[in-house]
Image (cartoon, rainbow, N blue to C red; front, side, top):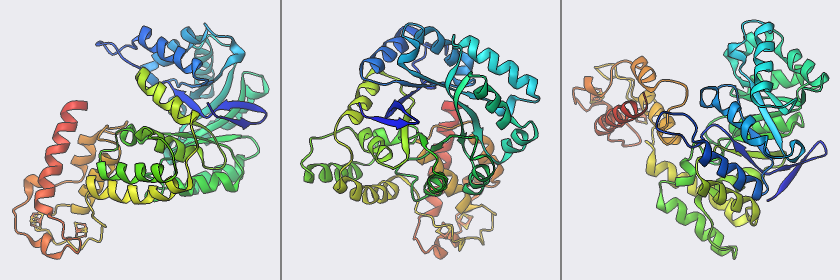
Amino acid sequence: MRYHEFQGLSVSALGFGMMRLPRLEDGRINRPAAREMVKAAFTGGVNYFDTAYKYHDGESEDFCGEVLAEYPRDSYFLADKLPTWLCETRQKAEDIFSEQLRKCRTDYFDFYLLHSVDEEHWTNIEKLDLVSFIKEKKDAGLARHIGFSAHCQPALLEEIFSRYGDILEFVQIQLNYLDWDYIDAKELYAVARKYNKPLIIMEPLRGGMLAELPSEEAYNILTAATKASGGASVSKASYGLRFVDQLPGVFCTLSGMSTLSQIEENIAAFSGAPLTEAELAAIPQAVSKLRSDIMIPCTACDYCYECPSKIKIPQIFKLYNNMAAKNFIPGWDSLSEMYAELGPNAHDCIGCGNCESHCPQKIDIIARLQAVDQKFAEVIAAHE
Ligand code: SF4
Ligand code: SF4
């Protein structure tokens, strides 16, 4: 296991995100199976465990408290997060914090974060001055290091660090090689580096998609680079994890693991050789192949705007691509609501072909709209 330094602490490069633990049929955590995973994590050198108030509907913290009590308190770092959107008052934040300590069976958190800071939640965070709330916890020795998980635009991250950079010690952002050039990952990372803030990374495998890498050609590009570097073959996940790990400033990469084999695979990724230059150079090519294989190559040019049925074609394709990048696993937002908000869809298409005749990307829009509609129906049926 590789370790990175954070303020004199030696933190395992791999952190165990406790939000996708194995479940029983009734939805509760399968504690014997999850306990084995934690044991394997300790054996493999993992010393960072990350939970949150909302993970597993509140059961994650309770499980962490139960299982981690079996290990010496100074043998691991425990991270927890304040659900800022549930804090109507500071008293509510106090109540939640006390509940978290109790559930986690600890006197302190090693890392404590404002959870899910975005433009919407930031208003409430500012109103209640929750930054000073977690600072008070740090001053009281109840939270040894404080930061936040960011789901915001780079502009807000910049504002937060410019105003609270002397208090907030680190930031957790979503970053992976698929998103690096396509959403704000690179910009968010650059802002953190500008303020010299250490980073924890979440979703390094894009919700598991990069562990599956649903494009054989993309995988072949990566394995060819590994071979050219003289390396032995590695897992698909290894590329995603090692890509994140080689970024300066990143001191822990979280993976929300669900099986023992994922733990073993991920520990191997952080125990073997770091990403080589040849592998790093191959990643953009693999991303390009991955995108062309699984996504709709719409550039949102809007040349197809004169649809008589008023179908918002680029917006529908964008939603599809976002879902594809998440391996069609919806997050907290409802896919059915997002799809409905876009208005007319494939069902309203009259097949006039006007859109296809204007599309510079030569996308078979009519068929694609139908395929998107069918895929969304399957995802909604499975998850909502
Ligand atoms: S073929 Fe369908 S999507 Fe394309 S312009 Fe005509 S109605 Fe709109
Ligand atoms: S014309 Fe083609 S590329 Fe442009 S927005 Fe429409 S579907 Fe996308």
